[in-house]
Structures are given as C-alpha cells and as structure tokens.
Image 1 (cartoon, one colour):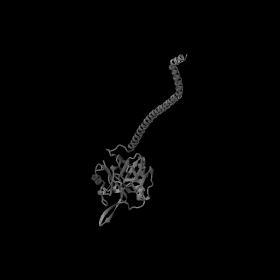
Image 2: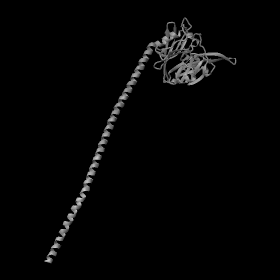
Image 3: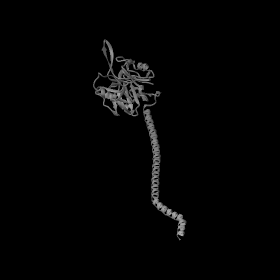
Image 4: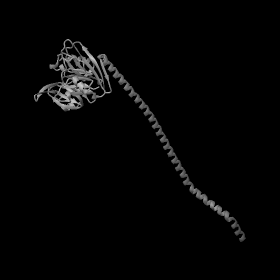
Length: 348
C-alpha cells in the first residue's frame, strides 16, 4: 500500500508542478495588467496631445496663408492706388501746365534737357512789352546767381555773364551801388547775396524793407523781408539776390511801398507757379515808341492773371536785361547793356 502511494505521487508530481506554475503565472499576469493599461492610457493621451498640436499647427498655417493672401491683396490694392495717384497727379500736372501755356501763348524758344526745361514767350500788353521765361528745374544746380567776373566789386553785363558761364538764359539780378575805394570805383551789392548756399557779405546797405529773393536747395522760390542772418539761413537758401519789394507771397498780393507805387519803369521779376515752375520776366520801359514800362500794381495784376503764387521785384530800370542763347531779346532802356553786379543764369 505504501509503495502504491509513493508510485502515485511520482506519477502526479509533474502535473502538480505545472498546476502550481500556472497558478503563479496568473497572479503575475494580473499584477502586470495594471501598468500595461496605464501605459496604454499614457500613449493615448500623448497621441491626443500630438493630434491637438498638429491641428493647432494646421490652423496657424491656414491663418498664415490667409494673412499672406490678404497681404498680397492689400499690397496689390495699395500698388494700384499708388499707380492711380501717380496717374492722377500726372493728369493734374498736365492740366495745370496746359492752363499756364494757354495764358502765356505759343513759346518762341524751347529748350529741354535732363537738368531743365525752358520756354520763352513774348509779353505784349497795352503800354508795355517784354519777355517771359517759364523754367522747370529738374536739377536746382541749373539755377545760378553769379557775381560779375566771379569777383566782389566788379561789374559785367548780363550777356557777358551768360557767355562766360556757358548759360542758356540770363536776367539781371539784385541791386547795387558804387563807392570809391583806393581812388577806384567799387561796385557793392545791396542786401544779401547767396551763391551755392553761401551767404556773401550779408546785409549790405539799404536798410529797411529790402527783400531777399532766390531758390532753396530743392529749387523752390523763397524770399521775404528778413532781419537776421539766422532768419535767412533758416530758409535753406541755395541762390539769391536782394532788391525791393515783395509782390506776391503765398498767392496773396502785397502792398507796394509808397515810394515805389504808381511809377512806370522797366522791370525784372522772379516768381513761381503753384507747381514749382519758375517765371522770369523782363519788361522794357522808358521807350514811348516801344514800351513805356509798367507800374508794380499793374504788374501784380498781370502776375495774378497768369497764376503766379510767389513774385519778387528785382533791379529794374536800365539794368533790366533778358538774354537767351547769347542773344539779347529785350530792348534795354539805356540803349545799351548796363554792367551790373549780379546776374541770374540758367544752365542748359
């Protein structure tokens, strides 16, 4: 019997071991099942986060593309508006130019280059005659004030200045007087003269309402009655001379001083249109059979009629001279050219 029990135990032992092993594995498997589920949940959460980030990135990309498209549309619209504005300005400038030319008539002389456009017109009014130059400066350096022989104290005619500098157009400039120095006549300009931005011997003689007239470094006409050098230099002057009086300022006609009123004389004028074009005028006078001259009051009326917005009276009388292409077009009242201290010339 004992032998039979031992034999049965030996036979069943392997199966008993397998059962015990399986029982232990089930316990271990159950113990491992929780971490695996947690890992699966973590992986799922991570995958969701990645998906959310991917969706956000796609949204950002879409918004960026939309903004880019909107920017391109806005940029195109802005470009079109800029083109339209340029076209409208060109049309406006052309219309304004045509209005000016309608009032001035047909030019008798025309010059156009990269630096400047010059159109010369005859001025024929009841009782007086002269010449007008409408000057469009593309380069302000084409406009120059020149001292006679490039030297203080000297004098030369406008024709001589034009020939000497190689200019195409020239008119006489500011006022002057003569004094004796070392037993010799010395020509002194009055007021302020600016050449290439440099003030030459400022505030010479002739106190009171003497005015400066010239252009700034942008080629626009500047001027007025100035009291100090600081006030003058604040205008950023490039070229200029002095005389009297101011005729039109900011589109407004100015009162004429009593001592200058209601007298007919030869005149020289520097002015500007609203579009920045310069107007340079010489009126002959003191010649009953040709031109008696013009009062400043009447000249202002003509300038306003022509649409001039700024205008200054320069030295007149026998000094008034208009030269184009080395030819004197007007008839100076002295019967010959008067040497002067400063001239305004336009380079070709």
